[in-house]
Image (tube, rainbow over all chains, first blue to last red):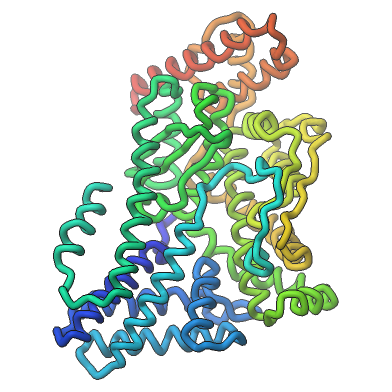
Amino acid sequence: MTEKVQAISRFRLTQLALRAAVELDRVRSGADPRRETLQALSEALLQTTAADEGSGPFRFIDPGFYQPLQRLYYGQESVRASDVEHIQALIRRVSEDLARAADGSRADTEALVRFCVALHQELIEELTAEDALVVHEGRIYGHGTAPSLGAA
Amino acid sequence: MIRNELNYYLTDMLSALPPTLSDQVVDEICAEISYTVSKYTEVLGFILRSTNVRNAFEVQYPLKRLVAQVISPDARLIMSSEWNYVPFTYPMTLDLLPDFVLVGAPATESGNVLLFPLAGHEIGHSAWRAQDLKSLLQTDVSRALANAIDADPAAMVRVLARTGEGLLDLQNVVLGTALKQLEEIFCDLFGLYVFGASYAYAYEYFLAPGGGSRSPLYPSSTERVGYMLAGAKALQIDVEPELFGRWRQSTARKGVDPDALAFADEAVAEVFPEMMRKTFEILRDRNVETPRTEVVDQIITALRSRVPYDEGATFPEIVTAGWRYLRARGGLSDLADQAEYEMLGELMLKSIEVAEFRARLAPDA
């Protein structure tokens, strides 16, 4: 069996978001952009939202990224009603803006910094909440409260 | 590797920061460094405890060979323990240290050979990622999920009314839940394939009588053993029908939407046969052996004679024989049986050592 190309991890995307935020902050202060940092995040973002390739019965985003990206969408667009297409459109738009910024073209650097910071916040929260993988969680005999759909 | 990662933050990143950096970005840097130090501290503690002499070092090499077969020839295994009563691995290391497989046992049981089949489950998590099962299965799961929702429109209306979310949101969240459940089932099938009946015995020993509070990211307690028994049947593993006969059902946690969870459960049930087929196919392609019944029987004969098995056997065969012997002797749980129980552990460890010695001296080693 051949080894498969691994999907981008949440930790990797977290790192890329922070590096891009730092880079964009430099650009905001008048420095020239260093292409590879912004380009890497631009490509990684597209990878996270291109999971279904239209082959399933409904549009979906890589499940590991759906909830943080959904919360990010709510925060960025200040609306509660979202669907996958809207999230994907936002990510595509930001990805294109990042690619433009990487090439030194005109881009809304302020907005991109805000996006990268918000993305980093969402992902770090997800990672911090991640517990060790255990054989069975049934050892907990209490009944912790979980969010409604968030825990399905 | 860990030093390099931390050096990146200390030297490459922090020293290169522009003085004009905004407060919001500084806060994110602090958050990431805090997270990274916290997670690596866990891993460093784990590595430190891996040298504890209470660990069963005899099983290190057999498990490492398994890891090399199913993950990568370069993959490395670290076995250790923690003061939590559950075998575990760290999700973070699956991303950060992909060539390392970390298998943790409860400290109180770190020398108990009989519990090691559960290491198969933890290695399974790395195999799930290495084989990218999530990508392989997610379209199938999305179809099964759509079918489940279509089949019960009243439940769909209920869940959307309760949560105030849209259908696509429901579908995406439940898809993630179902895939996490399938990962856990995959890990059980992985353990079962590699360790045979001893995986089911170790699972039953460790988790009896089932029940407890159900995380939505795991199948229910009884469904899970049902999947395990289906796997055992497909592999023609002889497990006593009464093994999980009194297994208790788990109860869903508060705040988990029951209809949404039911959709996930139905999707999992529909995809399970295909996932089981793929799981066993992957392991066969990797030439992973299942325990041989005739060798297990020979080892049991040696154990009855109070001698280690010295003809060469795999670790899963030895531990399967150990479990079968233990069960035939009624569990050896009386105080008067303690000496025999301890001797069984020693005989298994010595048999593993002898098998390792033989494997290294074999002409094709």
